Image 1 (cartoon, rainbow, N blue to C red):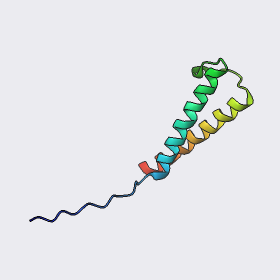
Image 2 (cartoon, rainbow, N blue to C red; image 1 turned 30 degrees about the vertical axis):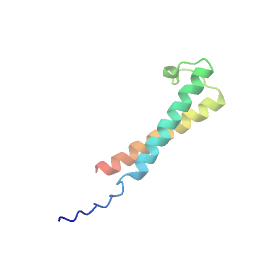
Image 3 (spheres, one colour; image 1 turned 60 degrees about the horizontal axis):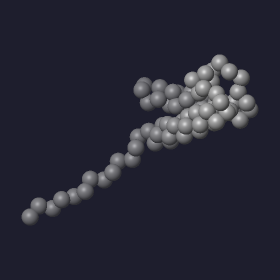
Length: 77
């Protein structure tokens, strides 16, 4: 009889990047939903003056994108 052993699960190497990606997806969805609710086309977010709530979401989304890009550059080195 052959004994089988389970392989241990390796922790994710880029767990922080995964968290940033998840947060970015959540913010993207919220931003798009809020833009549509207010009658804006989400594709034009860079070209229109946004109300303060949308501007805050946009800024947070861009901050997370920049942090994710920087983190991915570190892992590529």
